[in-house]
Image (cartoon, rainbow, N blue to C red; front, side, top):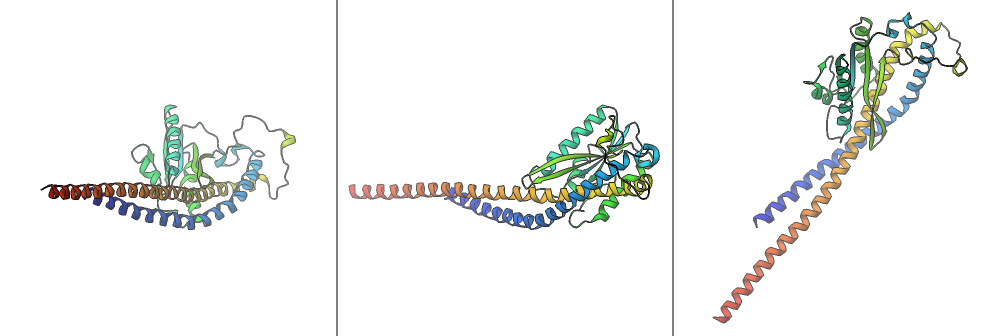
Length: 291
């Protein structure tokens, strides 16, 4: 009977776990729709913004603005965007491993690397593994462009002040509910600025600017940082909820399979116990009959 009670207790516990995972799946699904809509509506704007900015950058001197400065990358900073909470499969682990490989490679080249974690998982992971500056956590519940501006304020003045030479942004790019791909963007210097190859003039789009390209660049460069960081925030939130939906759906199915397995085991043990009792009764009856 003790074995039956243990199995029954396990079945009850798995039932409760299934209720939790199903509820978490539903919560993630409700958040995912809004996050996906925000991300998909912002993607075209970010892409077009980068296209125009790169075109502008190719037409001005790299020394015309401090954010365009190309220096020897001795000191590097990395913005790492992860979620604040777990239970979302490999969403955080895949990104953190990519960032860790990047850091090891740069440290192996003798570079100085500092991490700007956005999200509790990234902060906790690198707490004892790397130098951390300006950590931000619990920011994904409700965010807007002001958060992107705040993160930009943490990185723009130090770059202008030559406190570091390169800035990279790591985040999970949303592909679909089941797939989030680690992505990296170099924010400073602007990727188009230090291209070694010349872009053929026939392939360049020619724009008429009002005011001048240099004046426009003065205004657009800080916005460029805001746009890319905001896009990464939107991709991270959509990816996190999509990954949690998939993870909780898998967990719910695993619970159902485990319940079926435990129920089958329970029935087998119970049947064996009943058979053993019947054998005892039959044996006792035969003994009385013989006596």
